Length: 449
Image 1 (tube, rainbow, N blue to C red):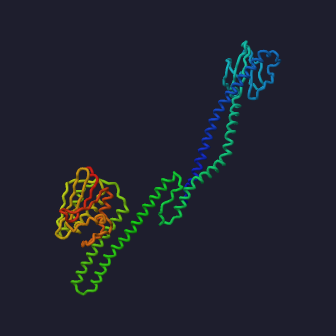
Image 2 (cartoon, helix red, strand yellow):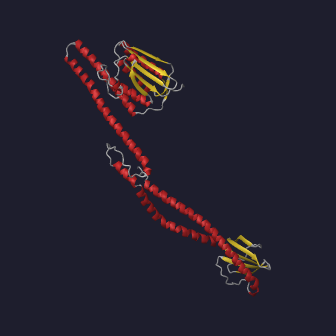
Image 3 (spheres, helix red, strand yellow):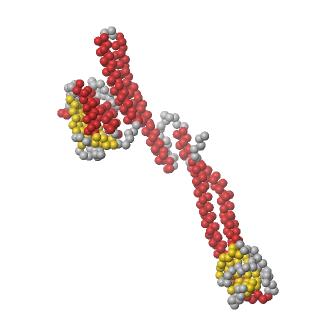
């Protein structure tokens, strides 16, 4: 059985009440220690006064007592006893509750004694003739009892007040977290599609950072959902055309009895399938880029990566008599993700070949000035008008009048991968003002490892 989640209100109540009780208890202990010290000083002074009175009385009237154990009616409590020792050796007078053993020693002043298992606080003094030694003692347990009663008197209000304190704190905590309850109710009653920002007008300062981040998250989710809707709509539109073409060609193939014509139509179907597969692959690439943030970057030898991509693309270019070349210094590195950089280079090279007429040229260059790295791909195609160069980075956008087969996603993918690497993409005229030159500038060259 799953346990209930901890309550913030209960936790705050316990913490506040516990803190108050702890502080009160610490104050009570400190008060007890201080009171015990004051009580000891007060009762010690009382003992000294009592000894002075007994010494004065014993010196003048000691002979009038006809019994050694007379009760002179001295106003002392049962916890206080006195003894008068003649010449310090013979007990001549004592209170009824005094022990037979001497309460103190032969010296004057305060002392602590244990007699018959009891602790005594004793003050001793001689008379002026040094004939009578007087001891006045008080049982320590009486002092402890007084201090205990004071401690109990201090703790009693605490024990009575704790339930009322807990109730008041609970009420205060409920009022204090009411804004949090309102936010929880607001979020809890929202439909999944409602992502408008939360109202921050009457929010406590402590909740502002949380709610600002939550509003930021709502904004990000809104943008992502809007982007996803546009992407889905555009993808459906782009896929509808090649699928319709494939269906039309297949119907032609089914309707003809001429083997040569059927074969030609089937070749067109295969070409349309290839274009559709290429479109789907690019869509999947964009989906992965949007859904999966890359991991930690590493040093990538961009020279080797570009060489490999150009080598793979060369046969297709040669089949159309397109001259493709690559120039670049060996060992040029950038910090990034090898798989994504390969996607970037492949799309640049593929776009250049796709939009270059038969017999044209594609030039790939990789340069490094020690601080940054630039990869450029130039073609001798029809070029991109300056007013459309920004738009070709948009998904599914194609230059008007272009005869080349394409989905309008190549440069969008290049732009997305460049953004992941902190690189910039610029589009300009190709060499001698003909064609297009796409350059990707990386901010820093990675150090060799």
